[in-house]
Length: 610
Image (cartoon, rainbow, N blue to C red; front, side, top):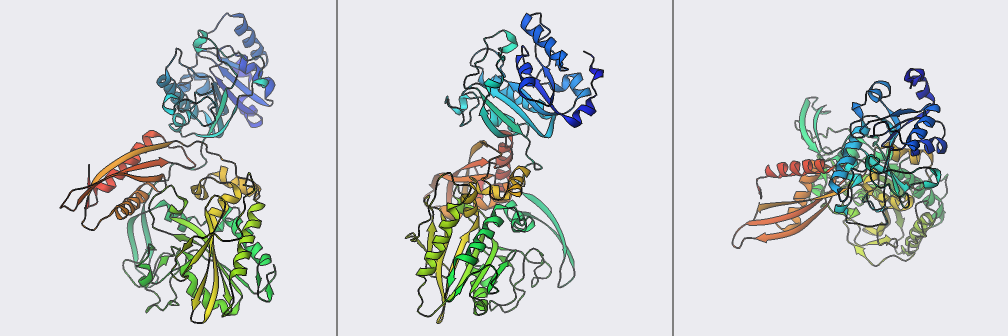
């Protein structure tokens, strides 16, 4: 073959380049050119040149069509192929159908084959390219397999791909009708071929972000606005808090949280009837505020799980420009003594009611930060977003009408959402669960059919003045509205997430990272404290894990507790579940995270690792 006759650079500008690996008799490559138009193809096999009539016929046909045919190419060692390395270092699509090491019951060897292929293919794959791997039914170990076998008895294809920084983006039945002449052969053509019936194609890609985001040791230098002195300090910040301060989701017009907030605001303008005033889109009476992060006084913050930061050289001046200093409106002795992020927008009520006399409705949207235990529950997220509204009430005016209006408003929104596969109804009568608050004595919850609370309503009283208050939980509403399964995706910086909503904000979310593998590790230690209890220890462990790994740990379960009588020592065993939401996480990386957590725990004076 005269490879020099092909102008690679010129062709690459116009067409997609495909590489087929392990095509034993080249029947797939021949059908591929007929099924997919406008591609340039290089095909290869592990076999040496063969005189078998079918193989010879297919090779000659491919060469007449300008296809480069390579022999003795090991799919796990593509870099050893001189032609690929020197003439074509990157591809848009790399295909490997029915990889197999030969023989039966070689699950471990076939996993190693997949792992080796993924690592090798990743070296030749464009950043926006895809790797297609077709397996027989039941081999891959994904939920798509209708032939079920134990996960440990499968090839663990998704887990093997993580070692090459690849994620599963699509799973589909192999389109055998497009390849009528394709007859897959066994290992080196010696074994029985594979059946296309029920075969599954797995499509992998690179994540469009730069590496795993665990925790960051930040070297922060800033000038104090009060004393002018430049201070530098190194500290560890949980990724969740970094994202809240340095990646403000509310500033992105396309983001699902912003979209659902805008939908809520528009509905509130036209839906609520406030006394003699009916909301309208051009009403000058509606006050809407979007603040990066409110603050509360230290005497309240000390009783809550808030996050505070202060200037080390000038205690009375907050120095992080991402946070707003208190203005003294909460009765602080000094306007500069407090600096915090709310754990709930309920704490912003004193400021809102001060302005309520000038408008019939106050709205504030802001992130909130909570210090909570790690749990599979959605409420365990550290950073979330809330939209709070305050409406003045008459002395004896009932809030029941407004409660029904809010429930109907939510019902109207969710009925028209693109993310619901079936109609979900928000009850127009509130659920019976009640939650105590700080300023609102008794919150009433609004929940969907699944039982998730998406809002809470209540009445705040100051003397004879009464105010109807409602708070919407924007993450939960956005997940329901768009069909997003993992709340952590709200922080995803992967372009596959953002482009979906930039192109069409009213589209149902399409997952781009499927079947992310999870890993479980146990950690045991002695805790020395006469006042410790399980909840306190779990909260402490959760805090250490968040600082170390960000939100890669999705569940923390206590599996054993043993207390030595007449002693302050208690033994705990916790099970940690690792899982990433938009990036590959390999078993080796999970092991490394476990070691990082152990090292962090070893520095705690009250903890002795077992």
